[in-house]
Image 1: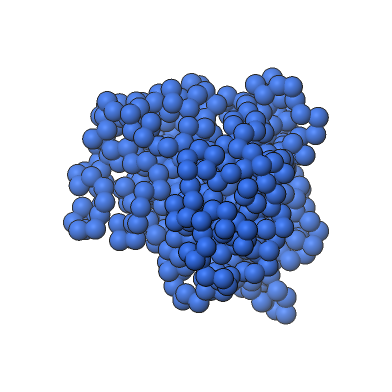
Image 2: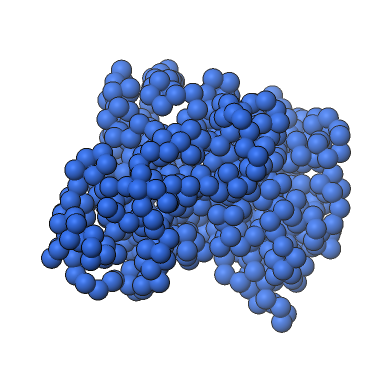
Length: 582
């Protein structure tokens, strides 16, 4: 902890509160790297000294205030002289939820220290701040709720959504992450308590992608919940009614979408999180042509999985078109991944996407998706209905299709049985198995099961983190197909370029950027994703690739184009080092 504070002090320089670095939005709080050498006073916007300064998470430096600053800002006697070992204290907690509460409490006291700790210890703290711990935090959100961390837009705000948005104190918002809580991870309908998801995602936008905390807005749309346990729970903090649907739901969402654009402008990115399938696809299609929208469950998951596949080809051999893909799960994640794979395959093979889809098969709760089921399929499943006799379940589909790549996204724990993995191994020398469902309890198989049942031949990645596995004298390090590899840098690429719409080529560019960061040493360990400790550099590369596509396609509005996109991206990234105050 002492070294962390020392680094933050040494990296500190004084700054002024106005700069247009970072996508043309004013750097009010001096948060970008490019503003580190400029002057600031902690009361640039409002008078802050003494206890008021210590209670402002943006300017509070806690025990890192120097003697001179303690005198200048009326802090003498308000702080003890010795630095506190926060990371050490955090490690003393036994339960993940206790760690989550402690570190999120730190964010409310000292924002820069929170992000500094998260950036420097990302592999240790990411599972605490986000999956899998955030799932439990959402389940118990009513009990651990301390203070508002975002906006709650409920049915009570109908006709007043614009007014509610104006109650948020920040005006220079670049990204809004919004959920309606209907399908939180693999945990189902958590209603208003799904707020933990946008809060966690935006913490990662800042820590991993360098997007300013002041430019991030978490939102929960509360239309009720169909979760009977929550409706009976005395600590439930949302509307106590069953979910609104149909026109009532659509009208509230439409009012919200228009109010966001009216308040923050055309360039604000609206990221949808954990909406149920029946709403997720419809919202993306409806607003994709009028707003800058991105669905992380559909598009973000697809991009990170495609990146893993592109990297894995260096291990399993061949091109995408040489492989047969079988998905277990045909919801928003499964179909989104499948479509992006088909697009990349189309790009590589210079073949129509209708043809490349034929290499990809999906299994849902009723079995293999085939032509004979087409009339009863939801619209987003229909492109994946191929000519084949009906197959009832996953093991039978594996035996019938002999896939070389198996991808799970159904949220059904332990669906990849010993029978399934042994069958995969019998068809291909190096089967690629991706158990993507979150949290850990929903994972289709564990890393140990994949390596053991395949006798060490499987290339494995999962959605939740797993510990390294020793098998037959070799240590295997499982990769995590974590959306955090993609969405923070993806969003930053839009802020840099000023693109007003998401284009499929940007998703492909993000995947290719991530895949290029996997080193020979990573492959040697069994990894198909780079170490998370390098995530800031990875996000910068993803952002630069996305911005490049925006400029190449003529979609960018930030002109002129920077000469060196990587350097410009890095200069615009949030810097958590402490500033020295006048």
